[in-house]
Amino acid sequence: MVPSDWRLNLPPTTHHLSPQLSFSPELCGKKSEVETKLIVEYLLPNLGYAPDTWHQEVTFGSVRLDFLVFATQIVPFVLDSNSPLRVVMEAKHPHQNLNNHTHKLKHYLTSLNVPYGLLTNGKEIRIYHRVESNIQLAFQCLGQELGVKINEIKALIGRESLLKSKEYPNFTYNNSSESILLPGIIESPQDVPTTASSQPQPLANHHNILQNLDHPNSKAQRRNKVKIIAIYHNKGGVGKTTTVVNLAAAIRKTGKRVLVIDLDSQANTTFATGLVKFDDEKFDNIKDCNIRHVLESEDFYPIPEVAQASQFSNPEIQVIPSHINLMRYENELNQNESSKTMLIQKLESVKNEYDIVLIDTPPSLNLYARIAIITADYLLIPSDLKPFANQGLINVKEFIKVINSFKKMLRKPPIEVLGVLACKISTNAKFIQHTLPKRLAAIPERYGLKVLDTVIYDRDDLAKCAEKTKTVGEVEIADPLSILDFKPDSIAAREFELLGKEVLEKIGMA
Image (tube, rainbow, N blue to C red; front, side, top):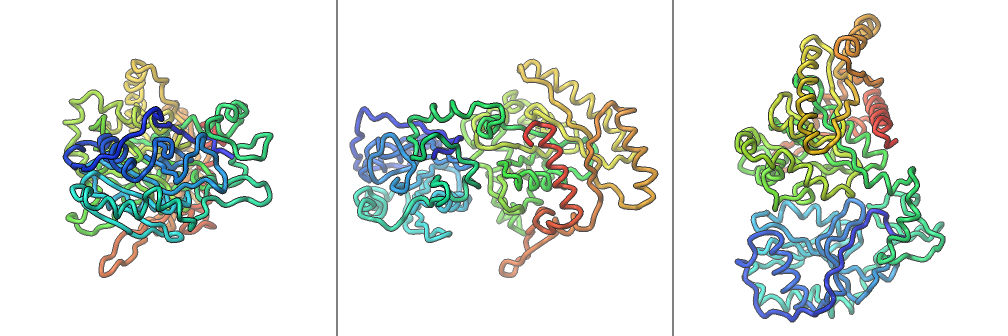
């Protein structure tokens, strides 16, 4: 069976590229040149792969592969137990550190049951070998050494070598339905689109399958309509980060594919999702690849290259981190008009890879808050309902009005306000009985905004799960968990489950 959200671009098959004898890393100044000049024009021909034995830009669920290489020629590509998936090749920008991408490559190899992965930025080439649920470095060399090292690479992942290898099965079957499951990508048999035939379907005939999935309630159809939600209030300290990360976890546990974007230079969401694994700024591995790079470059830093897998929730969630130096680049980005719509463009290119995008915002009226609301379809406003937070709702409404005028020029619909979320609310019984109802009623009466049914109370468990740490060697680093993973049976976890359900209902994805 074929996953409904695949994308496959076949390379030209009208000619066979002749192997080149040498390669120079100086030919590669950007990622696209690493793909064409190194992988397509040099590596693949020298390793014995004709154009019809590899595919470029292949997507299964949330996994997007730069190149997927086969040991035998298969056109059309059929998913069955004999499909000889053998090598995943990932190209990165020459300025990218390959260490930042090994975790994602491991996910690709283990999820798709592929034995080898090649990772390169043109300056360096690495080959990893999958061993059960882990990967090991099998080969490494500099780009300038390729000419003398190519035979070693051929012995490892060359087509002739891999044709002799029968070490790896490629798929596992669900015995009850005989449907093909891609481990870790398709989460349950009912997620796999079915046809009248129980035989595997060729990707070249995908339009026949998709025509059978055009019913309004089709899960495949809903997946193509990613929903973007900004979480914003211009008053700080109202529980915005707590809302973002735990709402993301609650939605992810329903089976939806979630991307979290941190647009706040305080980087609280980046910390809260456990992406800060250093205790000294000299080991900072986020400063060279974060949301700032996404916004400032049209040609480089696509979403899949910047997003990192975060294990603060199980299943894991993709997160685009922020960095404290984001505040230094605001004026520079402000002078570049395209930066305001850059996130829209880059999210459009991955619209089939996520169901929900949650954007955390700064508690201000600055550029990054504007970008978030320009990009988003929906707005959720966390508030502790205290006087200053309530007064801030006037600013929020004016801010939305101005940005909606800008969205109209872009021919985008105005942002839909889901409502005010009562957050960080005291659990004092008298407050809940007497004061809270009055404060909730004041929101629609004074400010004309809806209030969500769910209330998030200020509970100790929410603080404890965010403050978890672990010791690595002699260093103590943050190791936060979502409340749903920290204490899944707690009242706080139940509140976020209810919030996730309410939000999904309001945006039509329940």
